[in-house]
Length: 294
Image (cartoon, helix red, strand yellow):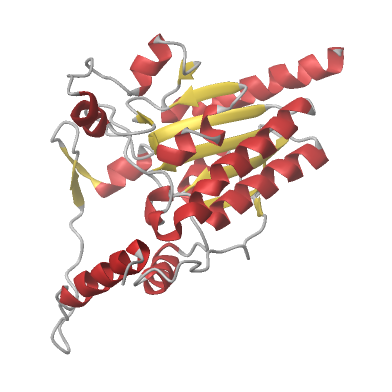
């Protein structure tokens, strides 16, 4: 067999078959309840899950911003009861017949109650209607599948048609390897949609959260008219370890973190999670005033 793709597929199938079957609980044995406490990976402090949730999943001891779901993000940002989802039916197929992909997709959908890693729709922020998209790190680490690219593109086109400000929260490990070139094509597709939107006079606010990497950082996430970031977010194409191993040099302290990128002009402003809604309200108000004067 001379096809390298077929050889790789066979290798992946063998690795999958070698994996140990999942451990099953004995019949009648109750599942262990999760601990009411969480240890912050940034500072080691132990906090209750309730205290962490009440603080928008920001560590009260050190201020580290923990990952949150797309639904929780919208709850923090939008006016209550204003979110209306768009394009929920758009979901990934399995274009490369990648071993185990269909099963993992179904498991992830059941666990997250999402159809894909992108949750898109409309809502209001401070009474102003916006088109909003959020990548959920709990769904394949927010990776960009063909369906994610389609949902981001449709959202951008909808914002252009309805003349709405566009706000996208990115949290992604990059392209989805299980979809290969179909995933990589979304970089050009989403970037072209954003360019058309901006040429029409639309406002695009890109909010970068931890982590924003790979094909997402190299496409629509980096094209905002205004680019905001959460404190400590890792932002870049390749990770620091990959870069160091490639160039065989030690990177500067804090390289690719939001603070470093703000200092070098890539990020306009770092905004703590608790201040983000008020910041967006201010930006939308200023944008509205500017449009009235033109």
